[in-house]
Length: 185
Image (cartoon, rainbow, N blue to C red; front, side):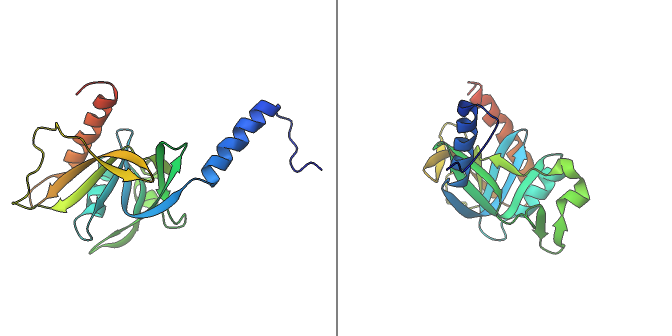
C-alpha cells in the first residue's frame, strides 16, 4: 500500500526525505538572545537582560548586516555537528524590542535584505558588564567554547562598559573567525 508517490529516482527521493526528516526530528532548544549574520558568519549574541543585545544587533543591521532572530532564538542540531538558529515565532521573528522605542519591524524599516530566515551558529558573543576584577583575554590565544545541543561553538566574552563600540568588536570577531576557518591564526 503506497504512502508516497514521486517521479524522482529512489536514491534522489531517499536523500531528500532523509534530509527533511533530519530537520524535522532534530534536537531543538530555545535560547534568550539574538542571532545575526555578520560578514556571512552566524553570531549568537547572549547576555543578561539589559546588557545591550538588541541595541548591538540593531547597530549591526544599520551597518548592513542581517537579523535572523531577536530575543528568542530556536536552535536545532542538524547532522549531529551543526547548530542552526531561527526565530522561535515566525510571526514576530523579524521584529525587535528596543527599550525606549518599543517593538520595531526590521524588514519594513530596513528592507528584505536586512533579514534572514535561518543561519548556522558559528560564533557566540557573550556580552557581560565589565568586571574590573575579572581577567579578560587580551591576546586571543585562548579558545573558549559553548556547548549547544552537544556541539561546541567558539565563544567570546565581551565586556561592556560606556564608550566601548560593541558592534565593531563583533564585526572584527566575525572577520577573525572567517580568517581562522581559512587557517590563519
